[in-house]
Structure formats: structure tokens, C-alpha cells
Image 1 (spheres, rainbow, N blue to C red):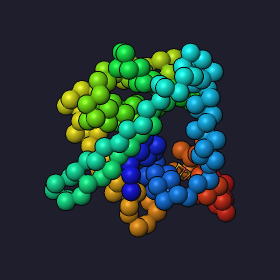
Image 2 (cartoon, rainbow, N blue to C red):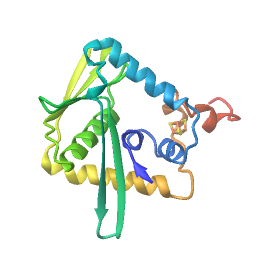
Image 3 (tube, rainbow, N blue to C red):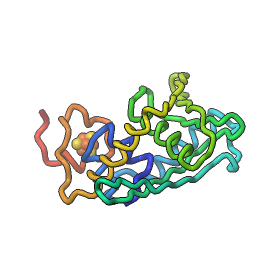
Length: 184
Ligand code: SF4
């Protein structure tokens, strides 16, 4: 089981969503969703269409107390190598900590690969907002705890409990989780 940025994002949204995605139960057309996000990035920042800015990285994180090594990977759509800045564009119309966690995960993996990564920028073209994301060294343990938690959830046998239905409105798994339920 490889932990990627999507799973780190979902860890901060819903454990069930993480588990479903990790176990390849896809209600969303994931590739289309990803493409759409990427397209928004390319349309909003056309100077970045250059594929050379894309970066794929991986890292093996060992947890000695459990005797387990967890593989991590990420595909970063735009990394400014000159300035050491990760840009992540979101099609969402609201800020979420899950986005910030995703960028911190990128910064962590870059630095573990000895690539100079100074900070990240979250971009929300829909409401013309940008947010700077830092990762300080004393936060590495936090990122590692996310990786471990995501790994634990992804590899557990049972599907985690659903969230309260009111929190599920925009989730692509809504039908999966709630079809057959009475409206409340
Ligand atoms: S519909 Fe709700 S409970 Fe189901 S995966 Fe999505 S957020 Fe989680």
C-alpha cells in the first residue's frame, strides 16, 4: 500500500473515503477529476503548461517501533525548481485544511529526497485566493503521523463508519454510502 497525496487529503476529510479510495472502490471518475483540477490550473496559469515542471517523487518511511516500512509517492503538477516552491491549484470554492496537509506532504517528500523545497502555495482560482503553506522541521513528526494513520486506515479490513450525512453533500461516494437511506 503506497500512501499518496490523495490519501493524505482524504485523511483530513473522512476515514471511510480514504479507505474506499485506497481499496480501489471508485465512484468518482478519478482520472477526470484529476484532469479537471489540472485543466483549471493550466487555464488559470497558462505559462505553466510546460510538462517539465511536473515532478514525481517517492520515499520509503520506516517505522522502527512497528517494524514496517511505508512507501509514499506524489505527483506534483507544478514545482518551481528555481525558487523551490510547490504550487497546488484547487478547483474548490472553499479552503480546507486537507489541502494544506497535502502540500505539507509534498514539501516533506521533497525534502526527504534532498530537493530544496522552501514553501508551497495553494491557489484557488475560483475565488482568486492564494495561501502560503510552510512546513517547519518540528512538523515532520506530524506529517509522519498522518502517513502512519493513513496507512493503518487504508490497510484495515473493515470499511470505517460513515460521517454524519450532513457532511457528505459534495462527496463522490454519496450514493455508495447513502443510497437506500431515508432522507433525514
Ligand atoms: S459520503 Fe460521507 S461517509 Fe461516505 S465517503 Fe463520502 S464523506 Fe465519507
